[in-house]
Image (cartoon, rainbow, N blue to C red; front, side, top):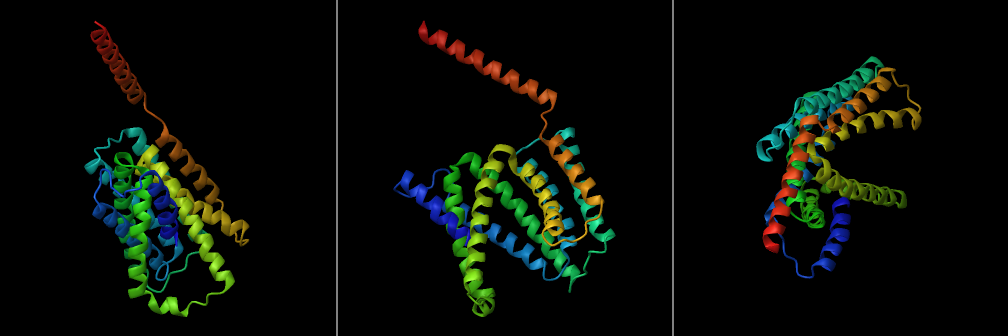
Length: 282
């Protein structure tokens, strides 16, 4: 339902702005592939919870970060300096501390098939990294409304086909009470807001910053378990939260030479523009 909400809202906006559907700088199959990878990434990670512990999922979803670093470096030619790499390392250390806090508190459940679950997480996070990098390229080279609209349209189609093949029995066994419907609607709203904000964050700060920011979701989960379910949290959690926050701040800081290079380019562009105006006036 999250993809359907994206298709309805952003598809309607796209039709209003452009009555004739015409993909600007990307082919329709690019969006189909993006939606397919995104659906499978979500499916594999959710499926992993059936076989391994939440602690393992929290630890292994960090695998998306080195994947994003490599993919953006290879395909988007993004250069990472020492300060940004240091920020990434500090963020990962923070999440590892969260995992150790769960283990120390005895909150780790083994799962029915930990190896299978861990492999599913690794596969899902790898696909998620590829999806994030692809979305970064698309939102920076096409219209963001278009990206979200087609992600919703093709995501709905892929999800419907996959549910009809793999989850038909589960769908039939679902008891569609008022509470269940409201929960699904709430999930659809949450996913709609999530994908909308993700597109903005990826466009402004890149896929790497997005995946680093996602690390804090593991910590918010611990916080909800503490205050929502009154579960005991180990003291390492608070230290881990501060560590990850510091890592995000360090990654977000612009290095001095990067700022000087940007100012130099701006001044150079200004000089070129003034020269062009002088030539045109004469």
